[in-house]
Structure formats: structure tokens, C-alpha cells
Length: 76
Image (cartoon, rainbow, N blue to C red; front, side):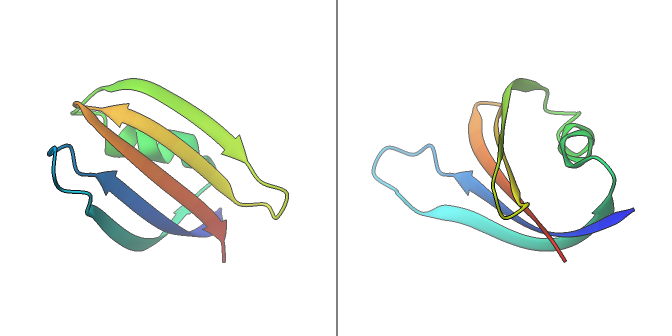
């Protein structure tokens, strides 16, 4: 199983508040996309897009429960 540092950003949907919630975690998974699907299973995912980077990191952009979230997976 691969080990990743995960940075999760949740955009604030309030009109005059541009702050974001940012969380850092270390996870072990063979499939980052499946990890995110499992994490947000209760909320339901309306949209998920995947962006792979040349340095081996992966960004997943998710729309779930009316919120936009970004997950950046970097191998440790």
C-alpha cells in the first residue's frame, strides 16, 4: 500500500467569506480516488475530476453536499 500526505481544502460557500478549511493527514491507500469516495460516501458525490501531475502527485476536485473540495495526494 502506498502512503500519502493528503491536503484537503473545503471552500467556504458564504458570499463574503473567502477563507477555506484546510486539513492535513497521512493515509495509506492503493487507490486515492476510492479513498475519497469512501470518505464522502454519506454526503454523496455529484462530481469528481482527477488531475495527475508530472511529479507523481494527484489532485482530486470534488463537489459533494453542495461544497467544492480539493484533495492533493503526495507520496511520502
